[in-house]
Length: 414
Image (cartoon, rainbow, N blue to C red; front, side):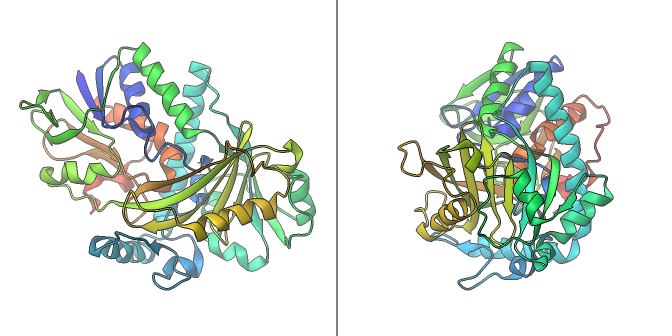
């Protein structure tokens, strides 16, 4: 089959690789000049366990997850936020009440499947995307556990290895943790993992190209059609025909698929990251550290540390919010003093969207007319779910039953 893929982020490149491995002729259309230039560019990097990723599902986060307005709102309304963003917030709050444990369970199981598939791909291609092992969730007080209790409980029920450790053990696991910070204990996930999402996406692009896939950059898709499948590029008069089209276009997926009769209420929940080089290895994170109170992650990526946090709705090109960035700086310096070279010219800040559906789960499956598929809306878990969702889509296109249960991710659920 000749299959088109719209989007060359982590979901698109992973899908291109899987389909090319299955022997299909693959053409990827990407509106940017390179792969992984948008949501996959400088995200937090946390791979697993998926339910512990901040903003993974609306059922995780405690009381702050229900606070929509005011200075202490869980999600900040930035310049450009409109009625559609407010509607999405209410949908997310409703999903927190109705989806609850089911969404977290689905995320835990699919996240485990995706992590295993990522390891298979990385081993087959001998790739190392600056990965690090181990996740430590810091608990300043016993009440902090309430914020992530659904994730912790369900991960344990599904067989994940989560260990309760005291403050002294936490500091043995992460020697760089400040000794004078209040710390009641932590949850240690030895099999937790992080990595450089953009680097892995670029590696998958080249691996897909070696298997015959073509990538067309600076190619914006104006519209799609199913039955027969076709792609119309901006600036072209005639659509290009294919046997199938897989939409991995992040936020653009909703607009592209609206004419197909499958509404996807996607929102760009923008987050921030700061990437900085190491100053002293033993004073920096060795794996990933999560601060559940402020929903901040600190991940080790080779010779750098990436600090991620914040959530805001608004314009994609909005100005950087200085108070949010200051919270990230304070968290990194407070937990790991002396671990990062903040004065280095290599320090980079980034604001990027997490294309997210209200229940926090992706949309994976057939949509509209024959030959039209979607693999989008992974939100904060795009990197964590990419390889699993790509393999599942390849199986669906080939009319095979995927190994993972895709029922919770049906695009028609909205």
